[in-house]
Length: 120
Image (tube, rainbow, N blue to C red; front, side):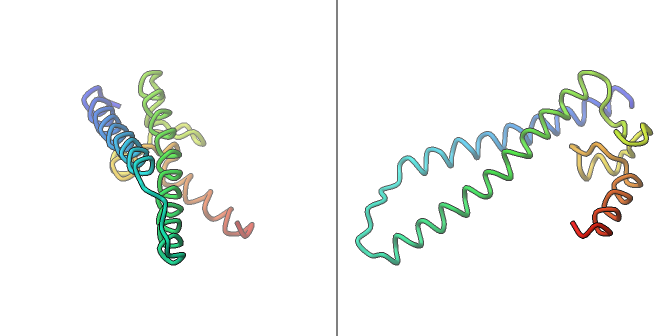
């Protein structure tokens, strides 16, 4: 992969990482600042439901943060954009659509077909 392309993906990944970390900090502040004393059980249930939903979103984002960090490590060690399965170069369009990917479209399709066949 060309140097300019690697820098493009590095910036893209770093921007997304900063955005996700900012959202996590904002959520932490909001959750610690909330007054959880609601006399109405329905209000308490609504707040709890909203909090659980927010935490599920943040958990998904936590997993994405880890994938972004690994992608940045691959940029550093020179393996970014190389399929972990077939060791061929991953297409630019695929990386643009999913910068954290580790599989080319063919290997990912094959993986999904195998998972579907196993009922996963």
